[in-house]
Image 1 (cartoon, rainbow, N blue to C red):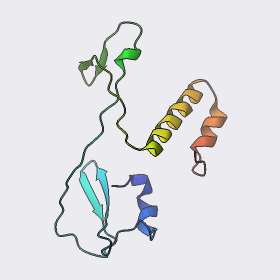
Image 2 (cartoon, helix red, strand yellow):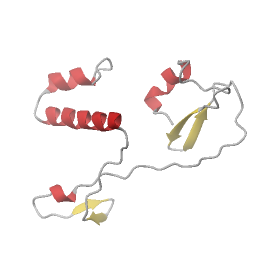
Image 3 (cartoon, rainbow, N blue to C red):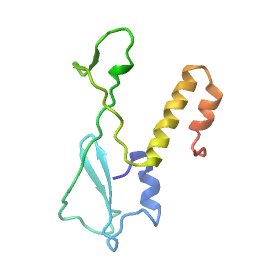
Length: 122
């Protein structure tokens, strides 16, 4: 699985591009289903998905202080649903985005724009 924004570079990169020898193809979960990319280097006749799970939507009703119900998609949520990420790398990225959004809310536009630049990495 690959993010749509990384697809073009990954298809060109010799370490990530689809390979018959390594039995590897790139896939993207699009709105129409699963799209598989193989660079026309081989044909895919059959696909078997052994495990695919979408992460839960995050919900934090415990953070409400005004007593109002926490409603998501028309349903009242009473328990917190935490972020499902099993990688330290993705946790760091999620925290970095949260910090950037907080900085933007506080009016720190310069730092926000700097850290959103593609050449910046944590």
